[in-house]
Image (cartoon, rainbow, N blue to C red; front, side, top):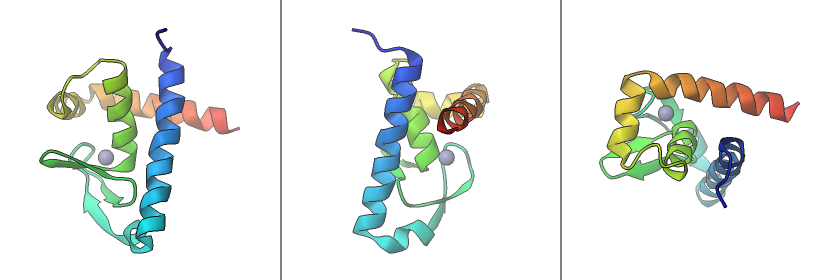
Length: 105
Ligand SMILES: [Zn+2]
């Protein structure tokens, strides 16, 4: 059965959050260690970040990338990074963030 976009987003948000929690449990310092995300270019916490080949993505971008993979909107991490450069996915990222905020209320 095909999942709706909303289902995939909420699922990936849980997965990404769990990865962040696991990282902090394993290495509490990583929450306060920072790197520059290869996708959004922001200075982000290492906790919950993932290395995809040559690129390291922050927790927020991991969530978005995994959502795109699950929905088959992208095939490789390069597709994702190209999308971020075009600001296509950035807009989508904002949409997802707003969406998650409204779900939390
Ligand atoms: Zn990022």
